[in-house]
Length: 339
Image 1 (cartoon, rainbow, N blue to C red):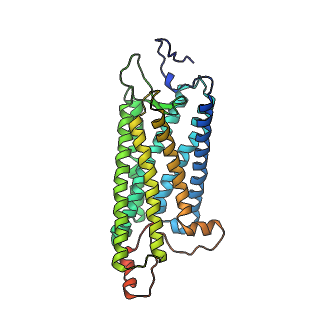
Image 2: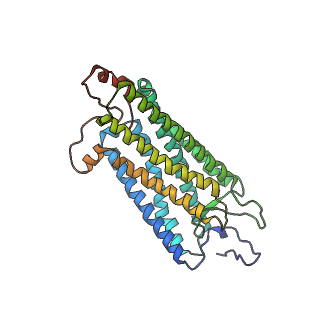
Image 3: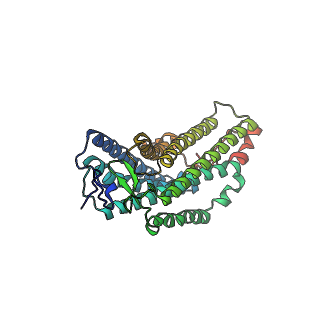
């Protein structure tokens, strides 16, 4: 396969997705880190799926949404393990264009759907806290199936827009360590994908809204605690605090990743390497983090993994102390709080 010679005016389509031929020390380091992080995300995601499958406390809307998002994250990172990381380490100059574009379409398909599900998980938690009496009706099984299906519908249309609209294709660039725009004509002034820009910014907007819903959830939890006067040292208060920290940590890394991706905008530009690396790797770290949070913030999961008996209560409800009459009335106000 022919490649693009940057020292000449020769144009060859797809030159942006080729390696430099001889890997540098930086290529090997970046590729190795990518491989380790992506492999960790695949492992943790697989553990999450097994836990959701085995433990009845996750057989609910929260578990279904979490599993749906985790599935695409596992697929996405598996593609990094078998393609993106090896191409970065080896820097081959004869990468088949169909292979590169196919991997890109699959990765972006999973990434965009994962972004939508990230938003949906946050909305699910927000509804559970702010509308506890309506939660079971809104997120009953039939509705959850419809919601998940509805989230799938826009994804193929968005991703296949890269193929339908000319001069918008992206692919992973081993030299830039991220997805880069592929020019379709010599001397083309535009250095970015219009379709990619729209998808990236759509995901960024969803992440911004997600932060808003999580803040609303946190405020509501604090308000409920003050109204029912729970002691700050109670197990339930500590559990909701863990929930708050889990949400903040997840969305903090996600908003950073999407912001950097929007700034870089998948331009084929040898400059701004720090922004490109930060955005690409922060997204992988976010997916690693998503796998860790289910293990770290749920003592039931840790007891299950350690072989201890897990009490058969659902994550969609919280048990409160019955020492006072005020405490006894709490479940109606705070039931269906998701971890």
